[in-house]
Length: 335
Image 1 (tube, rainbow, N blue to C red):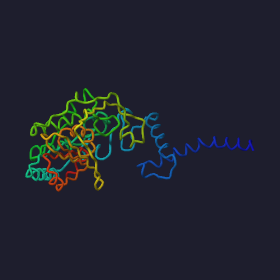
Image 2 (image 1 turned 30 degrees about the horizontal axis):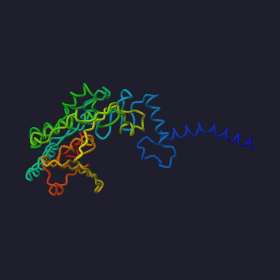
Image 3 (image 1 turned 135 degrees about the vertical axis):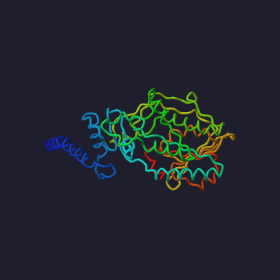
Image 4 (image 1 turned 90 degrees about the vertical axis):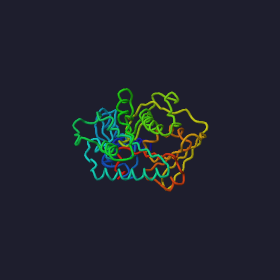
């Protein structure tokens, strides 16, 4: 009996490495595209996929992963959702498209102005736009202007809505501080703060009671680490971003509530400051790091995670300000 059990254990130990290798091989084959497309019944799929990708990253030093590229195996660059196309300027707007976007923005601006509402548009740039040095020099730039440059210049010359361009500020700041996460598509807390300042300083021209929150009125926690969305989408790589967390001092006079309606997230903030304006913002994920600041700059702020502007809601809420934040790689939405 004991001899049979010993033999069984010995066979099991011998088979385990073979089974593990088979699982790794299956994970490489199964995850050519997206994780969600692989057979969900495959046991240990996340473990084997993560093991394989980290082996490729840290040992084999491969450079291309699922939607990402790395030059130095520390910094991950996003190469999907038009990010690489924007870097190469391969899909410039036509004059007709620029005119259509101008009409869309200006018509909305006119409608809001009739209700006494000011309209502000800010467009955070792609990570590759601010840090092109982390892409291969062999990747060609195919035209002179990016879609973002085309749009801002066309709107400045022809439109009534002036787009807040943060690229110059970010390009200057990046020489002294890291402003995007190494392993994420978004700006880090320092980059987000600079975007916040650019926005609030424009708003302050027409609403002097809106005072930007200074960095010395924030809690700064040094040397935080975070995996980031690019690490996860690349295969749960054990590659992390290092950053300083920045949070404005809390306001004891404020309240917050969150609702989800038709799969859209609405966040409502209220402050007991009657001299501040009321604002609605339509936005994407780049706004998340700005939210804690703006939540204190208005007596009421309605944060709507969507690009779809609801004029009925605006008429009902009667804000003083409507803000539209859209990331560079999503500009086609404006068409």
